Image (cartoon, rainbow, N blue to C red; front, side, top):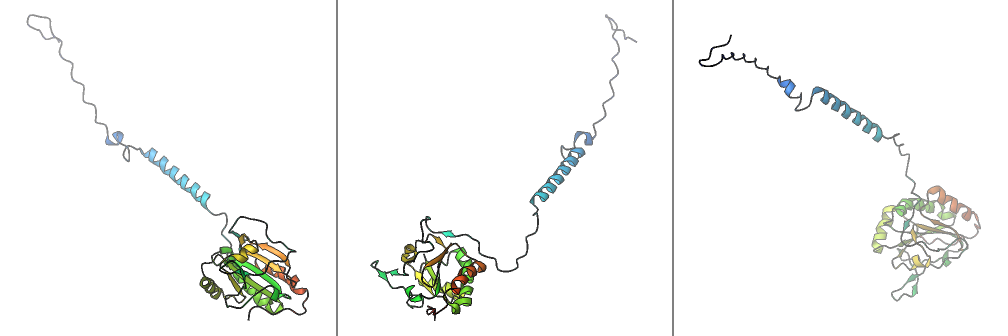
Length: 249
């Protein structure tokens, strides 16, 4: 009902105030964890699990490596110490194992033990000349192969000569020889004169000479036991009469 207003029109009564809106629950205003809802957290967790599964499958080895059954054969690689060039080949007669004196003049070559050595004195024997270095990984892998080859065939007329190159001193070579139990003669080519005369550009390099001193095979890189045996066996079977003396005592 309108209330009378003195000197004016009646005034309508004020409408009753609306009841206050209920407070929004804390869960509706905020997610389960910070601003994230439970659904968002569940989706993210599933995505993380799937990514972990994919990563595990992608990085797993296809098969477990086979166990080693013995010494690993040296890799068929050669350590390059210079640009490849035209080297000595089968059918040629190699130069003598001559060193160089202080004035550059050729000098007689001796082994680490001080014994003179030359190819001319080894006529009648099969000679394996190995150019190597103690710091060369494939050379180190091959050393036991040549050591055992020499032990097997020394009395059959085989001579192995190791020509060590690019070493800092003869003492370093002696320590290597002692560590590996090498019995065949070693020449320390500290000046590199033999290395250059034989036109070697990688280590190890092998020259296999027949009983007449001619090159019958050249191998660039290391050899395994089977290959070494196949290289010397036919040559040892040739002309067994009167093999010359061994250079090693």
